[in-house]
Image: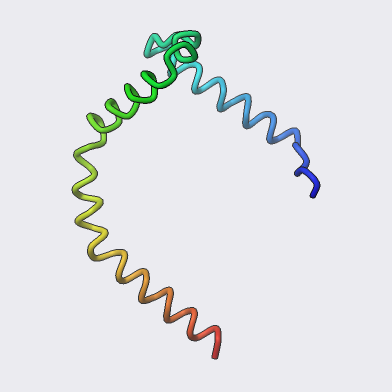
Amino acid sequence: MSLPRISGSTIVKLLIACFVVGLVLAVLEIDPMDLLRDFKGTVESIARWSVDVFGWAFSYILLGAVIVVPIWVAVYLLRMFRNRA
């Protein structure tokens, strides 16, 4: 098994992602050493913050899923049976 090649564009994308994440962490005044020292607490804080910020969307996602998921499953199964025939 060989490892996938890492292209120059992949390195550029990683650098851009690191820059954006670093900028966000700096704006939020989060120190990288604090992240590493208290990793569990950091994950819990991020989870709490995510629920506070995006919690309102969860009920809408569940409500929409009641309609969207069964339709998606039906379409998926129809396509699967058509491709077999």
